[in-house]
Each structure stands twice: as C-alpha cells, then as structure tokens.
Length: 163
Image (tube, rainbow, N blue to C red; front, side):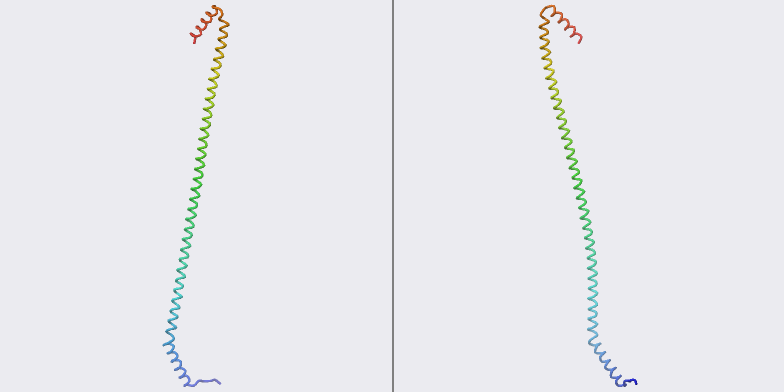
C-alpha cells in the first residue's frame, strides 16, 4: 500500500516552501549572490594579474635575452679589438726590431768598411815607406857614380812623359 499525502499537508508544505523561498530570496540570495559575484571578480582579477605577471615575465625574459646578446656582442667586439691590438703591437715590435737590426747591420758594415779603409790606408803608407826605403837603398847603391845618375834621370823623364 502506498502512502498518499493529504491535501492539507501538501498545502502546508507548499506554504512553508514559499515562505522559505521568500525568506531565502529576501535575506539569503542577495548576500550569497553578492559574495559569489565578489568571488568571481576576485578570481577574474587574480587571473588578470597572473596573465599580466606572465606577460611581464616573458618581457623580462626577452629583455634578459637582449641584454645577454648585447653583452656577448660587446665581449666579442672587445676580444676582436684586443686581438687586433695584440697583432698591431706584435707587428710594430717586429718592424721596430727589423729596422733596428738593419740599422745595426748597416752600422756594422760601415764600421767594417771604415776599418778596412783605415787598414788599407795604413798598409799603403807602410808599403810606401818600405818602397821609399828600398828605393833609397837601391839608389844609394846604384847612384854611386855619375854615369848611372844621368841614365836614371833620363829613364824617369821618359816614364813621366808616357803617363
């Protein structure tokens, strides 16, 4: 057997339901809906803040990448400049050393040539002195008589005329 409610019970339940509905609508729904809207707006604000923070992080990451690339480029430029400076200094040092070496060699050659000329001059003077002494001794021995003196003078005069 089925239980069937009475009509009075249904009426009173309907009235009680309508009163609860009215009271809930009057006092409870507005604060609940208000708190739900506040909750929804705070969640939306949090999502917007998170999105904004994510965009800022991405922008910062891009800025960091740009700064890193600029730093790398600057480092490469500095290294290149340092290499070029080193190569220039080495080249200048080599050129200066070569030039100085050439100057030393030229000075040594000039000194050797001067010493050679001095030695040749000294040798010539010595040979001339010896030649004069030998000639003097020969002439003393040869020119003891007058006939030989005249013959020598005439021979010398002929030699002079030929030169």
